[in-house]
Image (cartoon, rainbow, N blue to C red; front, side, top):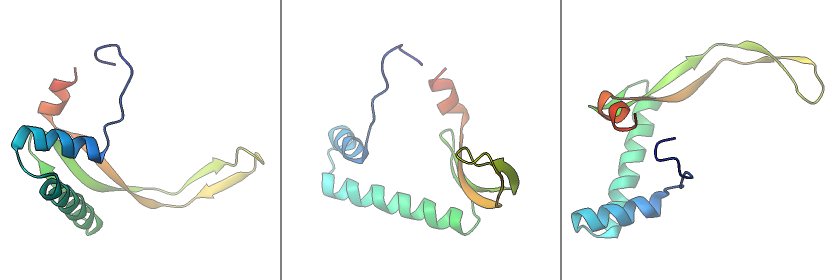
Length: 99
């Protein structure tokens, strides 16, 4: 881990506070923007579209095939069904920033 310290959990409130300090915009407006952004990303990937923020990354849906697994409690073999899962792929700038 970069910096060698413990990892902090930066939640929505902390993001809003930080953006308000950086931009001078109201927390209420920033909460609305953040909620609008997450709603938009969710709706677009639900429809099968990709959402790309150049340099930051891409949000998309990936198809996971059905597979065999083992129930850890009973040790019985089970079939895990195919499913759609959300994916985020980091862009070049984000990858470089965390090296």
